Length: 191
Ligand SMILES: [Fe+2]
Image 1 (cartoon, helix red, strand yellow):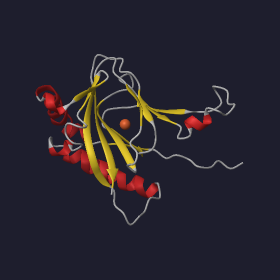
Image 2 (image 1 turned 90 degrees about the horizontal axis):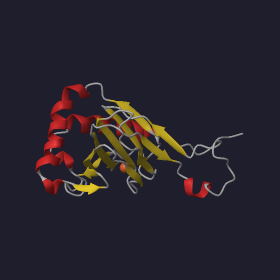
Image 3 (image 1 turned 180 degrees about the vertical axis):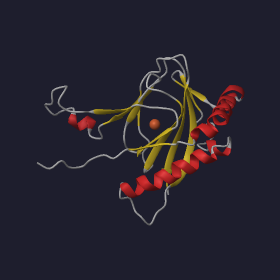
Image 4 (image 1 turned 90 degrees about the vertical axis):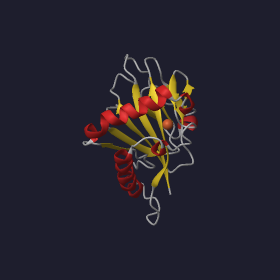
């Protein structure tokens, strides 16, 4: 038996995030709280994607987080065996605020080679990140029983953690069951 065509996702924890956590969260909340032009509602969540033109890093200081993301994006890029002559950089960044009851439905970030989520404030009861099998639609015709094939993969989220994944990979976010807001920064990475 040969198991072929695996999907690699990447996880890293930023141990020095504690040093920048408070000022970063304050800046994000300020951006969303006082400048209504900087977000749109996405269900019950707020996202700044279009409003910052995908350039959150031009509006607030997230330098250390961006450095961390790009460092790990390069490691992941090589692990994925993408073209070693090209160097991945952040192409867009945006912030998301998800309050109690908020979630995010299935989507992907194609055609970006890599996308990522960095968690400014999160724990496992505030909405975990669920990846869908890349062949999910096709596999729905196969005679699996419910239990014998993994069509989704759950990553438990936590503050200071970064997940990187191929831009083509569908994913969604579970509901936030707490009264705290889940705060994330999204990244699209390319060359
Ligand atoms: Fe996403």
